[in-house]
Length: 478
Image 1 (cartoon, rainbow, N blue to C red):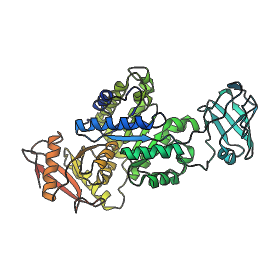
Image 2: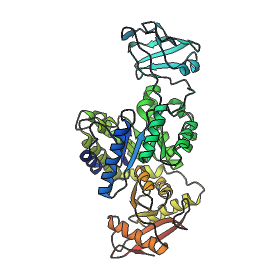
Image 3: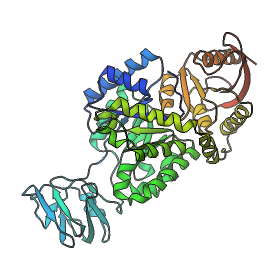
Image 4: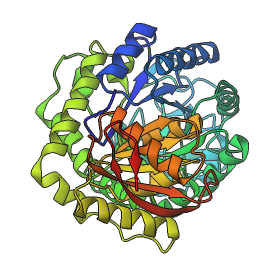
């Protein structure tokens, strides 16, 4: 199951893709990580999906990542006496703490934290931005607003606040219960919604205690202003373009996507581009030309992964959506200009032994035109630092730790193999060649480069580079 592309694919599971046969087909089509959306998945179903994915994993002998996406706070209006009203441009409309059913002049906003944080001039976006209000008078009990963009408004529509820094946690009681259930089940990644600041990530990490890696979803304008701190606190980043496009002008989203991709790569943190990538494939077996170009842009930018949401979870053509993404990734990476674009974006190595070794290994591998760059890694950090360099040859990561292997499924260019740890340096070199030979990365007589940390098995000690020749049986020697 060697992939012929470096970029990884995340596929969301749902009604269209929850049985063993379909998950197997999605993996064969190119899915590297499966996403479980806790907005729509009860705990029993989540456990069933995890067990099914592990079943597929064991049958193919390749680590598969599982990402559980927490719902986060859902801010909604109250109910209307008539079920719906029509808001007109220029009219006054009040949001208040009164629980009585609303009418064309007012409605309950059952979130006192919003009323406390709103200030005159702040925008309120209702129903995914279809209706826009501007606050004119605010107290802790009510907010008098002016309707800027009117439209129909009905019960419990969502509220977004692009200008308001809300003093609320990114995790609700539901999220805490979902998180604990997911950790007990043994998932690999937790996607954290509604992140506004680094403290939101730190709060989640205190609960997780190393049992999973944390992916911060960037979907709030407030997070953009604190991006560097959020990236530092997180293990990975998801560019949630759908929600960003509601709270920010749409024309800003592409540039922010590029900025976040480059910032995450500079920090050596995986970055996932998500939302509406092949949206038309929910109903159609082929995407639009614009969608293909959108996916290709993420590949050219050097993102670690691209994600399917409803396309694979509820669409009519889940397998076709994954295989389409797979083909786009392969084609872009074959383009002669791809390598020059990726190289031009390469950040300078940080002043650490691990980055110096990763940079040197990449340069040696490319200078000698070696067919594979092999990492022995206990925690996965060596492979992540090498992937930051976006080397030309494939990265083969060998780890004794299945948890590290599954997390690496989301990292650019990494083909991970779970194997018994090396006994000594000779064993490490020999088995590196055998594994790369077995999985089709090298042929007898070719050379490979091996990166590792000595003493073996101690995380964070990347300090060794070896060039080795592969023998007729695949074993390598220095």
